Image (cartoon, rainbow over the protein chains, first blue to last red):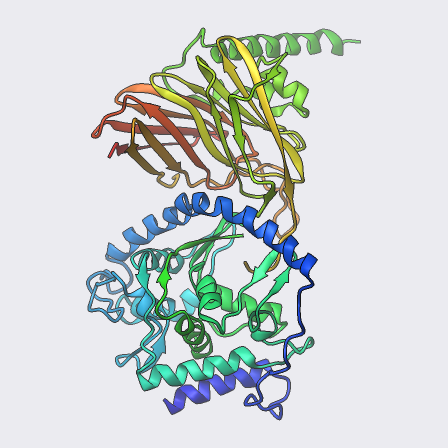
Length: 289
Length: 158
Length: 103
């Protein structure tokens, strides 16, 4: 575990300009009371209107197109070693077993000696079992308007096989617990030109950007609303994106350097966020604005 | 000067194609398979609602309560606006959907047969706040319903 | 080659609900890419739905339909086991046919 702690601290070091700013210090300024009554009402009206169409949007979610591709890719013999993930990849429930696997990650994998979220684990399988090169996958890990990487389809397929299941990150495992605690600190770590942290936007109730409510990922309800949107079909651009992507995008919006793909830092943040949603039902893959 | 006769020939050609499309749309000529050539170019490329309506043959329309258009008051994202149109007028044979302020207002046109209920849902792009209009054809007459959808700018990562 | 569609056809009460997801960029011809070049129009123009060998919906669509289109239709008289065949053709002549069974 020591290695991972160091890894995460390195991550913290690169996001901060100065290491002297200790990550222990929580960004515990009490949030200013955000909403006058009028603002709150306006938000609710817009939110209610969005929600009226949510069920229909979720019922017919283009994410299913990516899930279909992921199903094929999971079962196909691929890579230099010409093996399928179905016959080689253990997501924590046994080789090839995907039902309920997504909602029980991040978890600790002894074979990799690491805490891994679903995407990181599938990448690990693609590298270790199928023989793909990590650098090739990490070169273009996320979708854009003209390209969707295989890993995104695979994550979507695996996530879809946890739909309507209870989120159950094994936080009792000491290694997962450590990852959770580091993730919590990363979420609170303020740095960059705007002195932002994840928690600046997602660490207290009642915040919004323009028309969108921002979930407080420290609460079970807020964490769930963050978690179950991912992997998600993003209406803007019509692209399928993963929870890993979302974490990276948060770093970008904080004006931090991007975290390394499938790294400890991202796995730990996800452990914190998904762990906070434990006990609730996952309804993803999602459809996002 | 020499341009004109040539131009007229081209226009005449376009006109006869348009007439063919009109016959197809009217159901006089029923294609047995889909070909892109069936696409009603004049209607879909019309730059305003009047032109689009003319293109689908709906020169005059009347409002009807039996034509129901379900759209959000505010779109969560203008790139994907859910629209549902249901027409309870007997003998409804087609439904068209238009977004008035899009560069080309006509979005879609559906003809129904063989037990299809006059009910369609789709998702549309909207460049800005606009009226969305449904047009149904029933027993040779055209009916409309419309509703405004506000398009807003969103937040960041969703 | 065009991506497969996902088609779901379910009987609910006295109607069958047919839901179709299509994988298509639906480029308007007005969008610019990251380099500032206009992305050429590329969109589905025609689509049909046949159930048990009969044409049920004959549709034409334009560039205002969202990327990765989603359509829902309803019909009466369909039975479980009926074959649903959906076709589309786009402005470049690409086409796709997929099938499902009414459940």
